[in-house]
Image: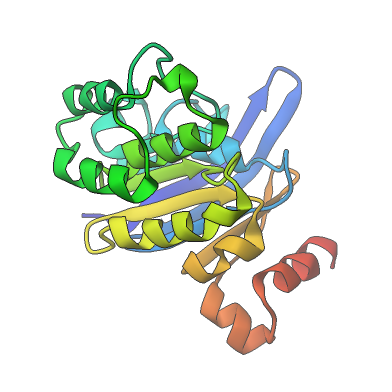
Length: 234
């Protein structure tokens, strides 16, 4: 098993004439919760999609668990998209059953536990859920899987600030860091800081810095927001 679960080697990604990532190289370790942080449009979502195998690099190479990142990785990667991917005519329970049929690593017992924690009604149709509750359901579907890599693109988007703290705590409760690694993109930096082991700061399609959160506090005497401001404006 490779030492690092994710490896970006000199990766560039272009969409038509726009360059989303420029010659990006980094590795990410196993068994950690890692934040991709930076302003909107910085390239965070592109990194997530490339890692999930949903986009291909224009040049360079992305590997997950030593394998080329492509759509064949679906069994090893649980992916939460920022966009809404739920079938509106399904109920919450039917959506869970659908995912259980799609992914052999979907843990139905764990899903029911998260359902109760999220206070979702199993018989309610997805089309009748609030934006916040659709967000909770998406988190449930990802956390109920046992995939070694969990990718979450802006998981707090659309959630009521009052429930975000409990949702963040649920991430710690329902992820097995002995067997799983979590990478999440977010611009809600201050809120997720207590959750993160390390961060990758992205700006204008380039990686500005990678650091352990504890090191940022001890060596730099700063919180995560302060460190980001320093490396992105310095």
